Image 1 (spheres, protein in one colour):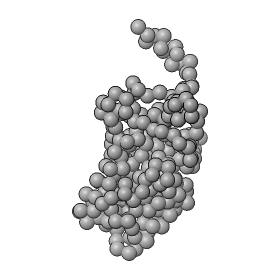
Image 2 (cartoon, rainbow, N blue to C red; image 1 turned 90 degrees about the vertical axis):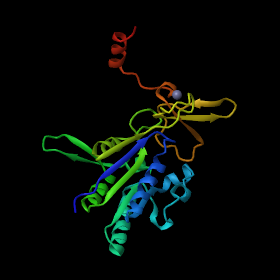
Image 3 (cartoon, rainbow, N blue to C red; image 1 turned 30 degrees about the vertical axis):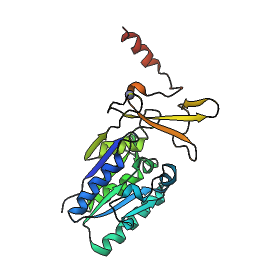
Image 4 (cartoon, rainbow, N blue to C red; image 1 turned 180 degrees about the vertical axis):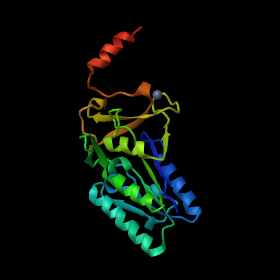
Length: 237
Ligand SMILES: [Zn+2]
Protein backbone atom coordinates (compact mmCIF):
# COMPACT_ATOMS: atom_id res chain seq x y z
CA UNK A 1 0.00 0.00 0.00
CA UNK A 2 1.33 3.45 -0.98
CA UNK A 3 1.26 6.59 1.10
CA UNK A 4 -1.97 8.44 1.76
CA UNK A 5 -2.76 11.85 0.32
CA UNK A 6 -3.00 15.11 2.26
CA UNK A 7 -5.80 17.32 0.96
CA UNK A 8 -6.15 20.84 2.36
CA UNK A 9 -9.30 22.91 1.94
CA UNK A 10 -8.73 26.60 2.66
CA UNK A 11 -10.61 29.86 2.39
CA UNK A 12 -12.17 32.65 4.43
CA UNK A 13 -14.95 32.19 6.96
CA UNK A 14 -18.31 31.04 5.54
CA UNK A 15 -16.64 29.56 2.46
CA UNK A 16 -18.16 26.14 3.21
CA UNK A 17 -14.90 24.50 4.28
CA UNK A 18 -16.46 22.28 6.94
CA UNK A 19 -19.28 21.29 4.55
CA UNK A 20 -16.74 20.32 1.89
CA UNK A 21 -14.68 18.42 4.47
CA UNK A 22 -17.76 16.45 5.53
CA UNK A 23 -18.82 15.85 1.92
CA UNK A 24 -15.43 14.35 1.13
CA UNK A 25 -15.31 12.33 4.35
CA UNK A 26 -18.78 10.91 3.62
CA UNK A 27 -17.67 9.79 0.16
CA UNK A 28 -14.83 7.83 1.75
CA UNK A 29 -17.32 6.44 4.23
CA UNK A 30 -19.53 5.18 1.37
CA UNK A 31 -16.43 3.51 -0.07
CA UNK A 32 -15.94 1.62 3.19
CA UNK A 33 -13.42 3.84 4.95
CA UNK A 34 -14.08 4.63 8.59
CA UNK A 35 -13.93 8.38 9.34
CA UNK A 36 -11.92 9.74 12.26
CA UNK A 37 -12.52 13.49 12.46
CA UNK A 38 -10.75 15.92 14.80
CA UNK A 39 -11.73 19.49 15.68
CA UNK A 40 -10.13 21.88 18.17
CA UNK A 41 -12.08 22.19 21.40
CA UNK A 42 -11.50 25.98 21.48
CA UNK A 43 -13.63 26.44 18.36
CA UNK A 44 -16.54 24.53 19.80
CA UNK A 45 -17.84 27.44 21.87
CA UNK A 46 -16.35 30.35 19.95
CA UNK A 47 -18.06 29.55 16.69
CA UNK A 48 -20.98 27.59 18.08
CA UNK A 49 -19.69 24.55 16.24
CA UNK A 50 -21.32 21.45 17.55
CA UNK A 51 -21.95 17.98 16.35
CA UNK A 52 -24.66 19.41 14.09
CA UNK A 53 -21.83 20.79 11.92
CA UNK A 54 -20.76 17.19 11.42
CA UNK A 55 -24.18 15.83 10.54
CA UNK A 56 -24.02 12.64 8.58
CA UNK A 57 -21.10 11.39 10.67
CA UNK A 58 -21.48 9.18 13.72
CA UNK A 59 -20.97 11.02 17.04
CA UNK A 60 -18.25 8.58 18.00
CA UNK A 61 -16.25 9.47 14.89
CA UNK A 62 -15.80 13.15 15.86
CA UNK A 63 -13.21 14.05 18.52
CA UNK A 64 -12.73 17.47 20.11
CA UNK A 65 -9.11 17.89 21.17
CA UNK A 66 -6.92 20.66 22.52
CA UNK A 67 -5.26 22.59 19.69
CA UNK A 68 -1.79 22.38 21.28
CA UNK A 69 0.81 19.64 21.19
CA UNK A 70 -1.14 17.52 23.68
CA UNK A 71 -4.17 17.53 21.39
CA UNK A 72 -2.02 16.34 18.51
CA UNK A 73 -0.66 13.50 20.69
CA UNK A 74 -4.26 12.67 21.56
CA UNK A 75 -5.10 12.47 17.84
CA UNK A 76 -2.34 9.91 17.41
CA UNK A 77 -3.58 7.88 20.38
CA UNK A 78 -7.19 7.94 19.16
CA UNK A 79 -6.14 6.80 15.69
CA UNK A 80 -3.92 4.06 17.13
CA UNK A 81 -6.83 2.74 19.16
CA UNK A 82 -9.23 2.87 16.19
CA UNK A 83 -6.73 1.05 13.96
CA UNK A 84 -6.09 -1.58 16.64
CA UNK A 85 -9.87 -2.13 16.85
CA UNK A 86 -10.66 -2.61 13.18
CA UNK A 87 -7.81 -1.93 10.83
CA UNK A 88 -6.29 0.78 8.69
CA UNK A 89 -9.19 1.39 6.30
CA UNK A 90 -9.66 4.91 7.63
CA UNK A 91 -9.91 8.51 6.48
CA UNK A 92 -8.78 11.25 8.85
CA UNK A 93 -10.36 14.71 8.90
CA UNK A 94 -8.96 17.77 10.72
CA UNK A 95 -11.32 20.73 10.87
CA UNK A 96 -10.28 24.30 11.82
CA UNK A 97 -6.74 23.13 11.12
CA UNK A 98 -5.46 26.73 11.41
CA UNK A 99 -5.70 26.42 15.20
CA UNK A 100 -3.55 23.27 15.09
CA UNK A 101 -1.03 25.12 12.89
CA UNK A 102 -0.08 27.66 15.55
CA UNK A 103 2.52 25.67 17.48
CA UNK A 104 5.72 25.05 15.56
CA UNK A 105 9.24 23.85 16.26
CA UNK A 106 12.46 24.84 14.50
CA UNK A 107 14.56 22.53 12.36
CA UNK A 108 17.93 23.81 11.22
CA UNK A 109 20.05 22.78 8.28
CA UNK A 110 23.83 22.38 8.75
CA UNK A 111 24.16 25.77 7.00
CA UNK A 112 21.96 27.36 9.62
CA UNK A 113 18.70 27.87 7.70
CA UNK A 114 15.79 27.51 10.05
CA UNK A 115 12.41 26.08 9.09
CA UNK A 116 9.38 26.30 11.31
CA UNK A 117 7.48 23.02 11.26
CA UNK A 118 3.97 22.84 12.74
CA UNK A 119 3.61 19.88 15.12
CA UNK A 120 0.40 18.88 13.33
CA UNK A 121 2.43 18.24 10.18
CA UNK A 122 4.28 15.39 11.91
CA UNK A 123 0.93 13.75 12.62
CA UNK A 124 -0.31 14.24 9.04
CA UNK A 125 2.89 12.88 7.51
CA UNK A 126 2.95 9.80 9.74
CA UNK A 127 -0.74 9.10 9.03
CA UNK A 128 -0.05 9.38 5.29
CA UNK A 129 2.87 6.97 5.78
CA UNK A 130 0.32 4.42 7.06
CA UNK A 131 -1.47 4.70 3.71
CA UNK A 132 -4.28 6.76 5.23
CA UNK A 133 -5.63 9.92 3.55
CA UNK A 134 -5.91 13.10 5.60
CA UNK A 135 -8.28 15.95 4.73
CA UNK A 136 -7.78 19.26 6.52
CA UNK A 137 -9.93 22.38 6.40
CA UNK A 138 -9.12 25.84 7.72
CA UNK A 139 -8.58 29.54 7.31
CA UNK A 140 -5.71 30.54 5.04
CA UNK A 141 -5.77 34.18 6.18
CA UNK A 142 -6.38 35.94 9.47
CA UNK A 143 -8.56 39.05 9.94
CA UNK A 144 -5.40 41.00 8.96
CA UNK A 145 -5.63 39.70 5.40
CA UNK A 146 -2.22 38.05 5.86
CA UNK A 147 -1.38 34.34 6.19
CA UNK A 148 -3.04 32.96 9.32
CA UNK A 149 0.24 31.50 10.52
CA UNK A 150 3.63 30.25 9.39
CA UNK A 151 2.23 26.79 10.10
CA UNK A 152 -0.65 27.29 7.63
CA UNK A 153 1.81 28.46 4.98
CA UNK A 154 3.79 25.27 5.62
CA UNK A 155 0.69 23.06 5.38
CA UNK A 156 -0.47 24.75 2.17
CA UNK A 157 2.89 24.07 0.63
CA UNK A 158 3.01 20.44 1.80
CA UNK A 159 -0.55 19.56 0.74
CA UNK A 160 -0.77 17.06 -2.14
CA UNK A 161 -4.05 18.68 -3.11
CA UNK A 162 -4.89 22.28 -2.20
CA UNK A 163 -8.42 23.62 -2.71
CA UNK A 164 -9.30 27.26 -2.17
CA UNK A 165 -12.97 27.91 -1.56
CA UNK A 166 -14.72 31.28 -1.86
CA UNK A 167 -17.67 32.68 0.04
CA UNK A 168 -20.29 35.15 -1.13
CA UNK A 169 -19.13 38.68 -0.24
CA UNK A 170 -21.29 40.07 2.55
CA UNK A 171 -21.01 43.57 1.05
CA UNK A 172 -21.22 43.29 -2.76
CA UNK A 173 -22.84 39.82 -2.84
CA UNK A 174 -20.48 38.51 -5.53
CA UNK A 175 -19.17 34.96 -5.22
CA UNK A 176 -15.62 36.22 -4.73
CA UNK A 177 -14.99 36.53 -0.99
CA UNK A 178 -11.45 35.57 -0.05
CA UNK A 179 -11.03 37.62 3.15
CA UNK A 180 -12.39 37.45 6.68
CA UNK A 181 -13.33 40.88 8.00
CA UNK A 182 -13.39 41.33 11.78
CA UNK A 183 -15.67 44.01 13.20
CA UNK A 184 -16.34 45.09 16.77
CA UNK A 185 -19.68 46.22 18.04
CA UNK A 186 -18.77 49.26 20.16
CA UNK A 187 -21.68 50.36 22.37
CA UNK A 188 -22.99 53.73 21.20
CA UNK A 189 -20.74 53.76 18.14
CA UNK A 190 -21.87 50.72 16.19
CA UNK A 191 -19.61 48.47 14.16
CA UNK A 192 -15.90 49.37 13.99
CA UNK A 193 -13.20 47.78 11.85
CA UNK A 194 -10.64 45.72 13.76
CA UNK A 195 -7.07 46.99 14.25
CA UNK A 196 -4.07 45.19 12.85
CA UNK A 197 -2.45 44.91 16.32
CA UNK A 198 -5.31 42.99 17.90
CA UNK A 199 -4.63 39.39 18.86
CA UNK A 200 -4.98 36.76 16.15
CA UNK A 201 -7.49 34.84 18.22
CA UNK A 202 -9.69 36.81 20.60
CA UNK A 203 -11.10 34.45 23.18
CA UNK A 204 -14.50 35.27 24.57
CA UNK A 205 -14.92 38.49 22.60
CA UNK A 206 -18.11 39.36 20.80
CA UNK A 207 -16.46 39.91 17.43
CA UNK A 208 -18.49 39.73 14.35
CA UNK A 209 -16.97 38.32 11.24
CA UNK A 210 -17.92 38.81 7.62
CA UNK A 211 -16.70 37.16 4.46
CA UNK A 212 -15.69 39.87 2.01
CA UNK A 213 -13.92 40.29 -1.31
CA UNK A 214 -10.60 42.12 -1.75
CA UNK A 215 -12.40 45.36 -2.63
CA UNK A 216 -14.50 45.34 0.52
CA UNK A 217 -11.79 44.17 2.92
CA UNK A 218 -10.49 46.60 5.52
CA UNK A 219 -8.30 46.53 8.62
CA UNK A 220 -7.16 49.61 10.53
CA UNK A 221 -3.46 50.33 11.14
CA UNK A 222 -1.88 48.06 8.55
CA UNK A 223 1.92 48.40 8.78
CA UNK A 224 3.45 50.56 6.05
CA UNK A 225 6.30 49.31 3.96
CA UNK A 226 8.71 51.86 2.51
CA UNK A 227 9.41 49.50 -0.40
CA UNK A 228 5.73 49.29 -1.20
CA UNK A 229 5.36 53.07 -0.93
CA UNK A 230 8.19 53.53 -3.44
CA UNK A 231 6.61 51.01 -5.83
CA UNK A 232 3.31 52.78 -5.45
CA UNK A 233 4.89 55.94 -6.85
CA UNK A 234 6.00 53.97 -9.90
CA UNK A 235 2.63 52.36 -10.41
CA UNK A 236 0.31 55.31 -9.77
CA UNK A 237 -1.50 56.72 -12.79
ZN1 LIG B 1 -17.34 42.50 -2.21
